[in-house]
Image (cartoon, rainbow, N blue to C red; front, side):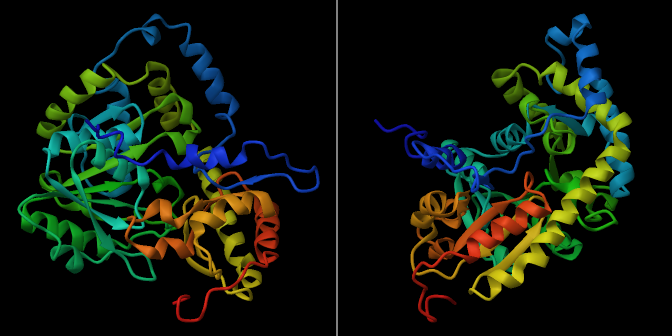
Amino acid sequence: MTTRTQTTFAPPVMEARRWLDGISFPDNTPLINVSQAAPVDPPPAPLRQAMADALTQPDTHLYGPVLGLPALRDELSTQWSVHYGGAARPDQIAITSGCNQAFAAAITALCDQGDEVILPTPWYFNHKMWLDMSGVTAVPLQTGTDLIPDAEQARALITPKTRAIALVSPNNPGGVEYPDSALKAFFALARETGIKLMVDETYRDFDARPAPPHSLLSDPNWDDTLIQLYSFSKAYRLTGHRVGAIVANASLLSEIEKFLDTVAICPPQLGQKAALWGLQHLGDWLAGERLEILDRRAAIHDAMPILEQKGWVLMGCGAYFAYLQHPFAESSATLAPKLVQKAGILALPGTMFNPANDTSGERQFRIAFANVDRAGITTLFDRLAALDWPLASPASAT
């Protein structure tokens, strides 16, 4: 017998870390790790103090409501509604143990074995992994050179087994921010065909646009079609405390509650209290974090000419990510371990974000710059520009 986990690929970030085994890096060429999109710094000091205070409260150490602390659901409801110019009631919000669990919970409530979910490529690998382990078919929706999916192309992929289209914006791995027009087109398509539109907005706090990223919640009946996913990990550096959210129809959340009760019973209490404190007190601090990430995004664009001269192409850039097309003849899957040895760079190849039969990923790398400042980005690009590997032929480079 072969289990579904056995037929699911290994976690890419953990696989990449194994490329470091047995390798040491000289002091003048330290490792540049751009493999994972997670802040490595701890939460800001005021939040750490609030968390320390929360540890003295007895209920922090007890089970809580399956769908999350009422105070956190209330606060997120208020801020979510203001941010999107619509109405998201507390009973339309559930708190989860991270955004990956939010996706898993939503898929479990929506799909049966043999059902289908459309995922644009390059896709977020954990979404693909959960679909595989659930017996749900991931149907790839190819994107163009701008990495923006097209709703009319998705229409051709919808079958009687399709249950949802799952988008990520700002996108992981591509970095692109989906325009409101694209999201509205997918929303209209999902409503017309009776499926759900899932939008993972883990990185919404680092969107470059000053206005709300979309207007989907302005539809008074948005919850008959839309499911939004969110993570507090990136905003408040709470990666280890596992706090995410689902914004969806209240009746769907009743189904999701069954899943959450069996896999976690409740979200971590300390993480929830930290998220609530962050929402209430860290608005200005988070605005500063956003500006820093936007400066790193600008640094990517500023540094690109040195790579463009070598044949590299910037396909997408935003949130924590730059998605690059490399000029070399060899696949990124075999070049990525060599990058560690040759240049002291740990990055994920595009093959980890594409179907096995899609060769486009062989020409691509994802650069996660959450923990690399402007000076580090310059060093990173200098190292990439110095690579002298054999180049792809002009025909294969397109």
